[in-house]
Amino acid sequence: MNVNNEELAQHILLLEKETDTINLSNVGGWQSDDEFIQSQQAEEVKEEIANAVVGVCNSLPYKKSVKVIMDNGWANVNRYKDYNNTHEHPHCIWSCVYYVQANDDTGNLTFLDPKVKRTMYNDEIYLEQLSNPASAFTYQCIPQTGKLIVFPSYLSHRVEPNPTAHPRISISCNFYLELWK
Image 1 (cartoon, rainbow, N blue to C red):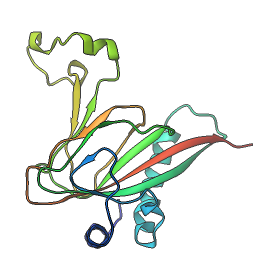
Image 2: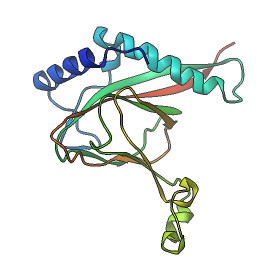
Image 3: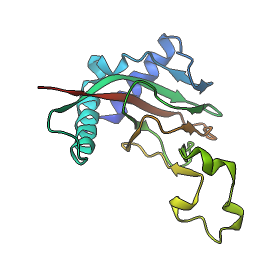
Image 4: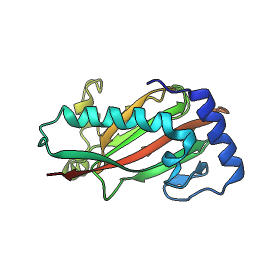
């Protein structure tokens, strides 16, 4: 993605100092309001994220009259030991996270298996290896600056605690679909 992450990170860190956090799934850390993505400073990343999510949707067998619409987007800063509890993103179809500043030791994004009945019985102790994601109850995504992860909004997920002194900065967005004539 063609985004000036350093400039965007500086802007988000300044907002963190100047505004109160929104408390939803975050434990510690800071979260902007969900209109952050509409700000002038987020214009570049908004376009890149929207284009990527439209690309994902275009690869699916949606009707040609389906339009992908960005509903909202907010910035997150997770510092030492900050994390996000397990949650979903209701009232939308697709969600994403874009890492403005992160590396592989600042806490993973963890997705949980959506098949409820599977959680009734944990067979992981019987498996010889867990390298196949289909064998695991959770799936870990390792954050990296500039990485975009798009996922279905119903998918339960959490953000693991940041064990470092380096802030993990991300932007999350939600999308819905509409049929146009």
